[in-house]
Length: 136
Image 1 (cartoon, rainbow, N blue to C red):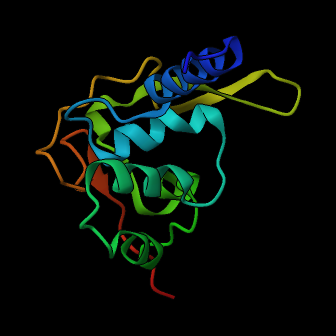
Image 2: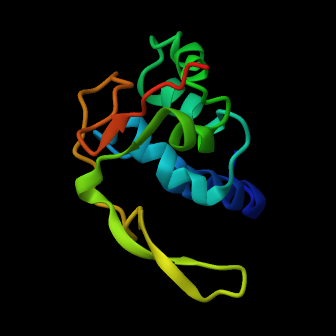
Image 3: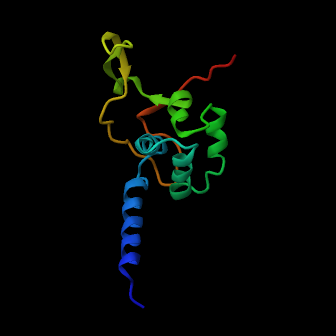
């Protein structure tokens, strides 16, 4: 049986989607999730995709992230982890009118390359550090 043009187009789209959204070889969970956030935040979609593709034995990943206050992918960086300070760059703090009113440390663009992790790991690479938990 030969593939139809529609079958070929669907296969091409699947391959392109995988190339754009699969974790790179050796890429850590956090570098992957940060990279994927350009496609939006929808729960822990990207963190769980990473786990499913690269570390399927990490069954407690979702629970561990939620214990650190990360109930969605963007909260991973708001509540649980942040870039090591030496990688942050100086940026302008803008007021409501868009005028600079001060300076702030922010993530660089582009981000530094992932420092890599061993296969099957959900640990962050050396670019990241855990944020301190706030206990009320």
